[in-house]
Image 1 (tube, rainbow, N blue to C red):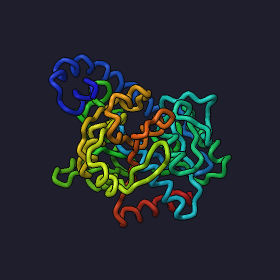
Image 2 (image 1 turned 90 degrees about the vertical axis):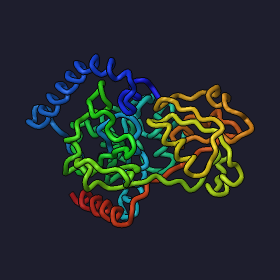
Image 3 (image 1 turned 60 degrees about the vertical axis):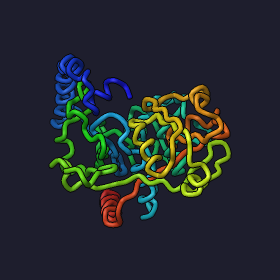
Length: 341
């Protein structure tokens, strides 16, 4: 974990030096953000409403909070009620031949970014990336989509939205509670108020919830199988653990420790574990630093970047967002409501 993230989330002693130094920049960040929001609220800057409803899945902080599994779950819910969804994304770290860029079967993680490619491969729905969310959404509508799911983009106020879902990491939550760069937040906790709906990823029921999270939807990430990068062979998690109780692990996500903890909770013994920064561009060297006689487990997000140089020991663990039946029904009702707008 980078030093600044240790300061934000773990109270590293360097906070006594870094936070005071960064507070003037945080004040400037707050001022610029406030002015920008006000320009939209008084219509000096115009919000643009697309012909089809938009659902935004975002967060108020930096790093991985579980947005992508929520997007995938929403795609499945939309299909279950007869809608034709598509997904738009900024495409962080992408290098597409042009923008907006519609992903296809030949798209690579270098072109599209890791999360958009993961969504495209898992869901087989139209996915468009680009900084101009309006142009991205219009391209999806041209593909026949009648509802648009925005992966991130909560702070992209130019794009009007019918529904906002804000995902909060139940473990890390809001760190030290400060705005960037002294803290991890893009917006303050006021942003969690209705009409936005808040989803807590991995809420610990033994910990009291702050008032801003009262009434939030609880979600968990569940894994049932392990997939081989080279052959696409699948094995149930139970069978895999029985056959390979000891493994290596890597993760290039917002909180690598969450992935390693998940593996341990499932019953794996980790011989070696290495965390990388979010959206890390993996190379063959990264994989070869592990023992080659043990399986190497990674996240699905990492797998889309490692497939071309994967070894025989390379496996990934796909996860899915799980809600209880009542909350799933409420999400379906919300989708149906906005689909009629």
